Length: 120
Image (cartoon, rainbow, N blue to C red):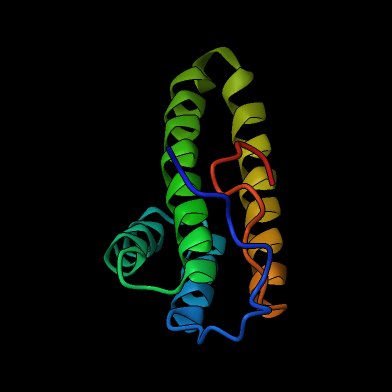
């Protein structure tokens, strides 16, 4: 169904969306919904016409947004019973982990190994 993600940019393919990838990671690190929403919209817009390495990052970022949004909703709903705060703290750690992983890979011109993973 999906092709294997490229391990890197050894072929010298020009990175057409490298700066967009970086911008989306920065927007995600702000932890606010509006910048993250702007980031996911930007990721959706650029995913189809970007290079293969950037495409893995953009897919990873889109999944980060939707999984994070679902976890945030669950966290906010369950704050009334006390567990929501733990979920929201875990979510913050998870988002930072995914963003840092992506930023490091992007700065090294590497693709995300498994852009559809739930972790990093």
